[in-house]
Each structure stands twice: as C-alpha cells, then as structure tokens.
Image (tube, rainbow, N blue to C red; front, side, top):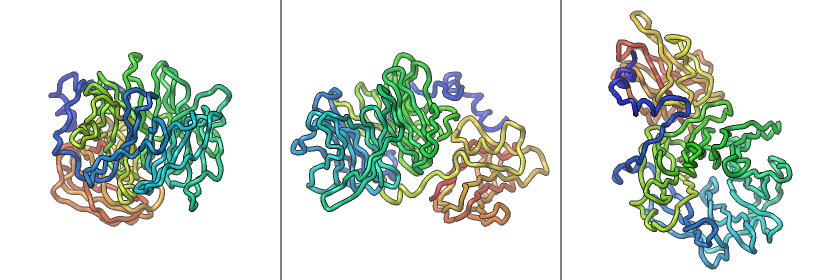
Length: 470
C-alpha cells in the first residue's frame, strides 16, 4: 500500500468517487472560492473578456483587466460602430486583439491595436454574403483562423502602414454544403486544427491533421454537446462538454491524442455551467466562466487542485446583470516562453514494480490516479525514471507529484541518455506530496529523477513528473 492509498482509506466515499473512472464525476457542488488574498501573485498579465445581458441584444462590450496595474478598462467604444463585439483574443506579442462583431448587418472579424486611438480594422469586410466569427491567432502570430459560413478558414496576416490585412485565405476543413464547423483553434506547431462540428446536442470536437487532411473524432459523446476547444502551449486541449443530457457545461482536458481519455476537471461546479476555458501557458492555471453565483461570472482555478478564485475582488464581476464570457489571458513574453515539455513523451525507468505501474504513467497528465512505482525491498537502490523530450530543450523547473518519495535524489539531464549532468540534488526529500523545483538552469533532451535513498518503506512512486522549459 502506497502513501496515497493509506490516506485515501480515511476519506469518504464521496471524495473517492471524484477520482473514479477516466472521465468520472470530478465536479464539486457549489465549490467555495479561495480567499482573495491567496490569488496567485505570479499572474501579472492582462485579461480580456466580453459581457452582455443576452446574446445578440446589442449590449456586448469588450473589457480588459490589467493585473499589474490593477485597472479595469472598457476597450470597445460606441465610435467603433460595431455591434456586439465579443470573443477577443490577444496576439502572441500582446499588441493586438482580434474579435468578432456586427457591422453593415454582418458578422465580421476585426483587429484592434491596444494602447492606440486607432479604430479596429475590419479584416473580412462582409456586408452579408459571409458570416465571420471565432478568430484565433496562430502561435507565431502570422495567421488567423476563423469560421466563415460554416467552414474553417486560415488567413495569412500582413502588417502595412495602413494596418493589418489578409494576404490570402484558405479553407482548412473544406466543409461540405450545409455543414457547421466552428470555433477553430490551431495546435501550437500549426500541424493540426481543432474545431467543433454540428449544432446543439449533436455538437462534437474534431481534430484535422493539416499535412494529410486526416480528420479524427477528438471528443463527441452521443447527445452531449462538446465545443470551444482551446489549446495550451504544451498541446493539451481544454474544452466544454455537457455533464449529462441535462445540458450543464463542464470543462474537460485531453492530451493532443484523440484516443486519450477526457479528464473532467475538479474545478467544475456540478450544479452550474462552467465554460469558455482560457489556460495560462506555462502554469496549471485556467480562467473560465461559471454560473456558481447565479449568472456567468469569471473565475480562475488551479487545474491540478481544483481551487477556484473569483475575480470579483478586481471589479470584473461587479455588474450582476451581465454575463462575462470569452476570457483570454496574456502573460507577457517571459510567461509565454515557458511550457510543459514532458507530457505524453516517451519514458523509461530502471525498473517498475509491476506491469501496470510503468514510467509512462508519470507523464500522462494525471496527477492523482495513475503512477510509476519502482521495486520495493532492500538492495534495490538506486532507481530512476526518465523522459525523452524529443530534442534538446532549456529546462527551467520540474514538478514532482510523489505518491511515495525519495529522501535523497537528483534531477539530471543528458543529451545522449548515457552521460548525465546534475541540475538539482537534495538529501532532505519528502515522503509524499507535490514538490516544485524552480529556477533550474539546464539543457538537454533527456531528464530523469535519480533516487538513491527512499523516504518510505515502499519504492519510489511518482504520480506525475512535469518538466518545464523552452
């Protein structure tokens, strides 16, 4: 029995059920918000979102909250002449936002340069022949993907003295007549596009590999609306899906592999809608909208622990008559450079306790219910677990989610999986729990935990090992 299993035996059946099943009931009924003072001080970027009374009623406006300046600003203006501006997203450099809105009685995609008095630029210029929605920047900022008349388009951006312009527009999905493809989001390396297909309860998520045109079902459970995919810099996909046929939205996470298991996040409120996920690159934080307080308000949560913070303290949720949706966070160049490098990558180990507790379980994105275990007993030290990042990377931090820990261990890197350099060493490790090793300065393709003395009577056991860097 490992440490976690010993603790779990003392928990109630309700808590145990939270972690039962791959996509089991991970939600909590009416979860409490964390104290305002505990809001993570590392979040010093900017958040953009929109609010309205009812969709399409003309009341939608775009707002920006600056966590560093602690200021809330309404970006959209009557002088723009744009009805219902919404779903704004930051460009990768934080200088622009793209959004959708109505002008000339048609939905169009716009770009607006932050910090200037220039009006937004209408990128699609439709007067009714096309309907243009859901813009998202590529990770390099060189293109925009958006929905046009039920098809997914990709436009190449050019910046001129007159402002940004599309130099070409191509279809990524070649939607058949009458199809409804929407809410596109490119993979970080632009190798694939995720999008929703269908309407209502029949809406599901697809993934199309652009080089081959192969389209796979990403998540499309029968009669459960699934939509709004957003991809974190490490490739993990966050999206909304009905909890059941009752229609309440819950936020899920999956790796980029369509065959991977959906993970219903514990930040969800079981009896409310939880939608519009906006992950913060390089962290486990995620902004989202929830109706826990009655109407849609904005929250921030830790994906791993499920802890939630209301943004009410920042004035964001002050107007209770309006829903706040479509949030998007920009953390600045430094924050955007740090990503999770290890998840889903090939793993190895000196040995495993049995055939089910293998090293790949420590890199599958599940920090609570899958793990790698080394052999137990005397004479089995040292033991190690490693991950192949696929190419040499800069290593800045490592997270260790110990089920049974090491009192003496090292974090090491290697370029050839043979010769190792130590980045971190301790003789005072913990028996169990989450350990974050920050401010590392390493480089290599392979990273391993090399344990020489166990902190418990069991083997070394890691629920998850996360390697962060660039």
